[in-house]
Amino acid sequence: MWRVRVQHRTGYSYEGEVISSFNEARMTPLTDPSQVTLESRVEITPAASAYRYRDYWGTQVTAFDIHTPHDELVVTATSVVETFLRQGISGDLTWDDLQNELVRDPYAEWLAFTRRTEPGAELASLAREVAQAPAGPLSPALAAIACVETVRSRMEYRLGATGVHTSGLEAWHERKGVCQDFAHVTLAMLRSLGLPARYVSGYLHPNATAAIGEVVEGESHAWVEWWDGEWVGYDPTNGNPVGEQHVAVARGRDYDDVTPLKGIYSGPKSSGLGVVVELTRLA
Image (tube, rainbow, N blue to C red):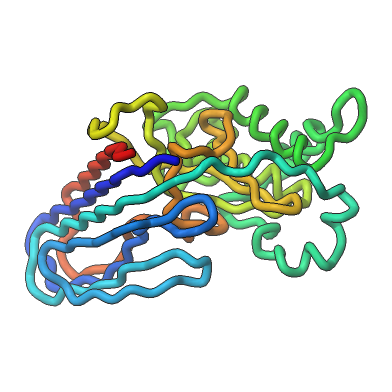
């Protein structure tokens, strides 16, 4: 078990005064069987009227609007989370089981392609090739791992090679990207095989041997979960199962469902964006 404090600060500056804005922040970690959020708060500058709700996917959203002129917006989310060792790969279901309507109906939204996870002919063909090992077809669980390993071995992690709006197929054609892109490519392959799969956003503590109380610089992270009888988390960027160093914040079909901070405003264009994430292991 790990106990981690996460502080995520996002700030926007504008080329003049913004008259009003309406925003949604998805920056509060989840509570589920693999982690418990012990405390959390979201602070907004300038002061704003805010309320919380859970969206369709179960993510806690802090919605707020500001109607006083401002030339800067800063949102700081601070949370303390306990994380636990996740389950291993179950591998209980067969491909025939996954084709059953009793599976396909309730998991239809995790099987559907989005603009970001459309595989095209190339990724769909690659997924089928990966799932068909020389010794015979792999089980769904092993095929999922093989897809993750294929993405990681054929794509290069490179900051700036893609943008926030890049689709998985576009990143695949470049063979470069960041964690968001690795997750989208993996989801495209998994769903093309008929495996329900979802996008997870959160944080990854970079040091498995971190000292208690040590503050380290982190960043937002993304990984995937697939369903083969149980939900299994896997990190395609690093090529390993999701563990105690991962803190999950939101789940959805792709990045568009889990954007940490988004909104609309009336005023001049933004002149800058700053994001700072600090992670502290407490236990």
